[in-house]
Length: 134
Image (cartoon, rainbow, N blue to C red; front, top):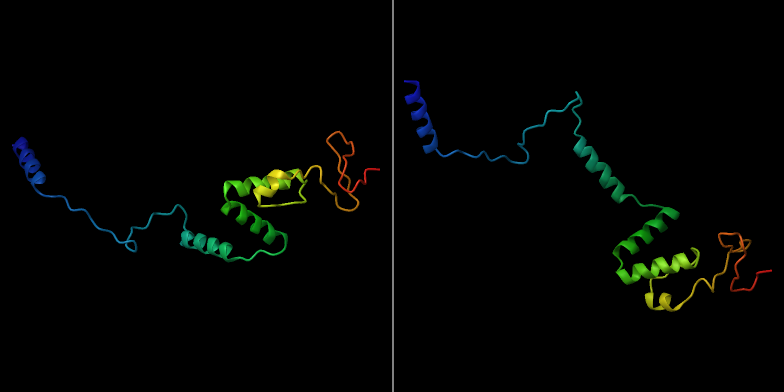
């Protein structure tokens, strides 16, 4: 008798199509939270990220952000020019023109700020453009 009921239930359940529930974004079931806090941390995170995006930096931070933006949006050639000009000049030149940077030797044309001397890793003084290597 039990076998007949199971067979009947199996055949009748396969004949009925299964319904797929449609859930709207607003009606999503709430995920149980491990703590008693009822704050919407996702909304707080979105607000913080939006505030950071709208924040206007000042001073050196603004200049660094500008250079980062130029570098991230630049072509490979422009990035190469920025890296070479900055590194070979000792941080005194930043150029985005690869045609100019590829031909110019910033190491020979280096000029140090007043009161500063160019030295190599061993501490030996390096020649500068102005000829101030006394």
